[in-house]
Image 1 (cartoon, rainbow, N blue to C red):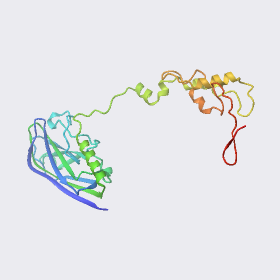
Image 2: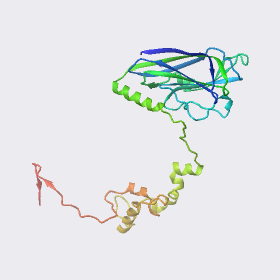
Image 3: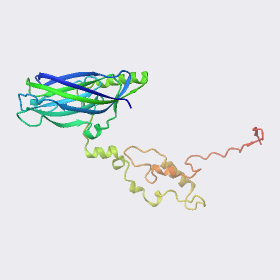
Image 4: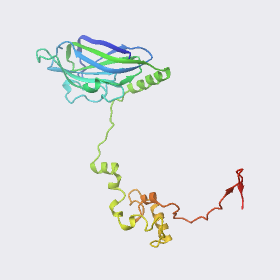
Length: 297
């Protein structure tokens, strides 16, 4: 299969963080046009020891089809290491995301330590994320104290892409969708807290609404007192019709299922021909001649 390997770097002598402690860096990489690109693997590496005013800094970077827009959501409560953050890793505009803590050479022997990445290393080794835009962006945010200077910034990236041809319609719709996904919300709130009692009522309504099912497990709830083949000495016609009518009545959402003795599931077991309303007379049987005409008697 046609696999493309793209290597790129971000190298700057120094960056100065803003009043929030963030320095935003972006780099664009052009890809083969009119293709469906599958980002199979991502690798990254901190090439040089940074020089820091503080003890350490944090690198937050995102790989996306369009420039990743910083949000108003806090990265950490610690204002000394950046406030704003990129969209969450599960956002549709994010192809890959990672956090790293980088240290000064005088502070620690290792140049960096990867805190987390999304997708994880196991899944990222066989990633199947695909996109249609003819470029990807490396979005790097260096987080340190307010107005601090981080020197000797250098990172290397490698991308393994599987490029496949696609129709112009599919490609155009894919690019349009990715453009809309890139317009992320500044503040995301897509979850809500639920107490245990509410969860029980929403997921398992029979626990909260509809009465208690075992209350129906009586002799009269095991269907009608008649056999399907014999006469019915144990029940009258009025009794059968009343039972069927009670089972077919709609109850309120917070009331018992069906009528007191006949829950709604009884109507699933109705014998053929049983009805609760007026019985219509049988129609005259039709007979047909050999040519298909109806014979009237």
